[in-house]
Length: 59
Ligand code: SF4
Ligand code: SF4
Image (cartoon, rainbow, N blue to C red; front, side, top):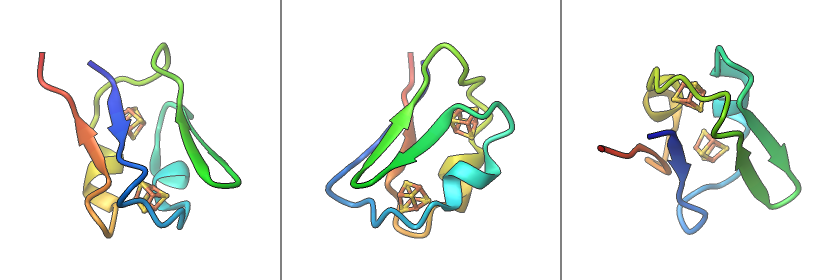
């Protein structure tokens, strides 16, 4: 399952966008968009997020 963003926690710092090796994350004005077809479940966005707003869903 691809990564998921919790918009309640996310402060839109953009950290996850830069760290994603698959280029799956886009920061729109007040929204993080994850391209589920690109996400390779590496967990880099989960690790870098300062507020714990990224999660990898378990299958
Ligand atoms: S889990 Fe990895 S590939 Fe998927 S969105 Fe996060 S950084 Fe990108
Ligand atoms: S690193 Fe976390 S707080 Fe920053 S934009 Fe990504 S999900 Fe939001």
